[in-house]
Length: 458
Image 1 (cartoon, rainbow, N blue to C red):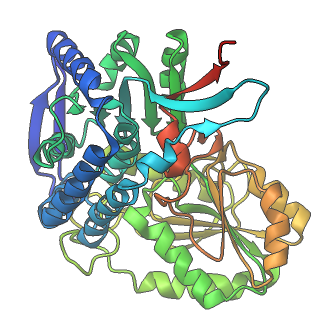
Image 2 (cartoon, rainbow, N blue to C red):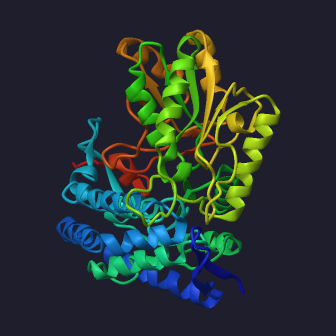
Image 3 (cartoon, one colour):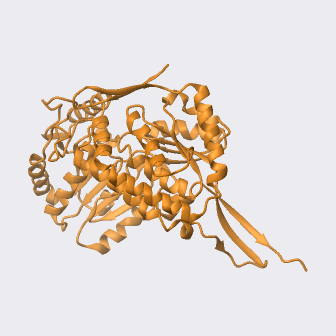
């Protein structure tokens, strides 16, 4: 039987460990979900709104204890963990009161007396959730999906079982009926059998492109819809006229977020050649003031890498890139600290085919490439298997707007870091996935878009 282990990446102490669920218990939970769906799909919008309001209250009420769970399980600095819980609460409040508008039938003018499109829930949806933002990544799927009348079962990452259990407990404490949200404590070896189960109607997956391909293939074999939010290697584009002080500060903030372990963190930095020296100097200065250490310290900005395996991959990616010609400015190795730390790092002269250019980098590494003209910039920006987000920094908004349609990405932000926002659809293209979460688009992803045509009898 597989053991799910929660281990503190700062102290090395095991927080807790759990056996994965036996097959009979998995089936029992899926059947419970199906029974819950039969009632939940018929609840009115006011009832759902009230529960979302209570969920937001519970999240804020328990903010400190929930944030500590995150920090103990993945090493995210406590200040960021508190913000993560606040974002979950704001998302619940955003959907409260908007469900009816988002799901309102669309009337379409045709030759018939009545023609409309309605949005009906599909049933039990499986959510496969990553570890890097254990509450946010779960709730950004849960909240719109259950708001639409579906119920969900969550297969969380194996290294955050305490977060997974607490999410289900929170839903019950907020008053949601039993079975509307359940956690499946299972390893990846049991995911395919859950996907095959006829109770499951669709799948949402967030994680690596490699794992996403496996999940999507399993879903396709069962002819079940999947939504994938996968990796990213987001371009961060700096033009000569950009406010370099603001821009460099934003880069450091975004790249160090969750110790560099965020899908939409700016990972490939493209700087115009004429400002490279000045920009790198500013970034290095700001990076030198970053506090790295105990993630429970409210002043800490960079915590440990979540797992030993993740740290080993990061070391290899950086060392191989340096051997291929990348220039190390600062950092580049494990930090001499207790825990799984990697020094905040700047690499310049980064080129295609280097690991830090071609691969998703999950750690506090800033990889800088120069460009000389727009055409070269577009080629470099799109020279990635990913297409999650991009940020463009310039005072010339018209130039930025002309560039937007040429950048292959699901999200483009001008003079701002790429972030998910409950008011806007979020997702990517290419190997960053397909489908959208959040906004009015996210709530409709797991609905049956049903066409209705009525002709009055004569």
